[in-house]
Length: 213
Ligand code: E4P
Image (cartoon, rainbow, N blue to C red; front, side, top):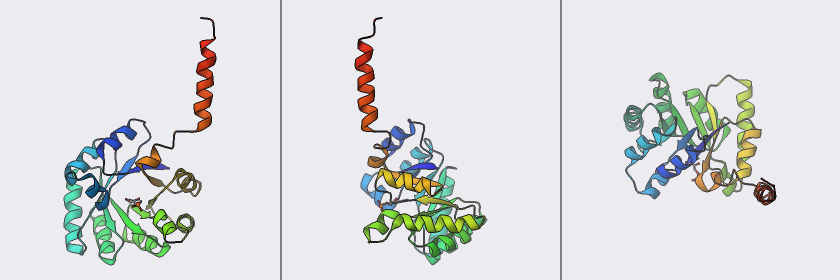
């Protein structure tokens, strides 16, 4: 499973990329607004660190989405154009597939939306599991449903588990065979740690002090 960082902070991307485990980044307008930096510059810097950076269109009509998709695509070959799951978005996904522009269909909350996005030609679909959990639904059940559907057909659309909230989400996404998980920085930083690793290493170091050299 590929691991993406869900952030618009370049320093965070550089830090996690240095671990050798990072396959990409997902940004969105809210994350970009939070950082308060120039969007294009942020995306370009990230593209130098990882091979796949999602940059979201902000137009809501096909013509505007299409224009932004072409513009972002021209920035760097690592850009993946993020398109919201709307009817206008479906038209944009189809257009981008024809033009060989990679896309990530965002704000997917149902299996029917996933199916339509894949048929329209999305390279990636992003079901938001945490937001479904927040709304009292079972987000991971949607991933299970989508992965089951995917097992019957030969879609080349990757399923990206988005809106993850804690480390178990990443394990469960992998158990279901999801292709990608995007992970917030705070959650990513918790993944390498286990208290038994810390106490085990402490004991090894203490015992090593007693080895005659
Ligand atoms: C994915 O591409 C989105 O940026 C993200 O996962 C949304 O997460 P949130 O629900 O925590 O805002």
